Image (cartoon, rainbow, N blue to C red; front, side, top):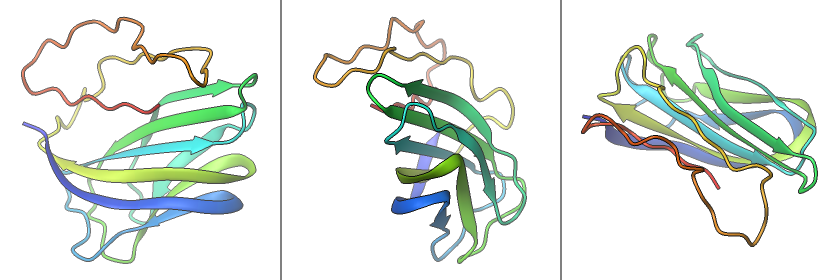
Length: 150
C-alpha cells in the first residue's frame, strides 16, 4: 500500500530555466517513489526534464500546456534506486526562463515497475470552470495512488 513518507519541498522560484527542491534532513530512501508537480505561467514554454543529484530516472508522466490561458502543468515521477542525502536536490528544467511553482512528495510502497497505468486531463485548461477528470477509467486495485493537479 502506498504511504506518504514526506513532502520533500515546495518551490516558488523566479525567472530561471532550472528550479530545485533541496532534499530535507533524513534524505530519501532507495526503493521509495517521488512525485513532482509543477505549474508555470506559460502555454508555450515546456518542461524539459526532472533530474536529481544521485542520477535517478524520472518520467514526465503528464504535461499539459494551454496557450489560450497561458498555463502549463507537469506531473512527473521516479522510483528512487540511489538514495538521496540531505542537501541533495531534485531539479525541474524548463525550455526557457520562467517563474515556477511546484512540490515534490516521497512515497513508499509504490510498485517498482508499471506504477503509472492511466492519465487524463481536461483541455483546454480554463479558469473558473468546474474541474472534471474527463471520465478516467475506474481504478482496478485497492491500493492505487491517485495524483492530481489543477
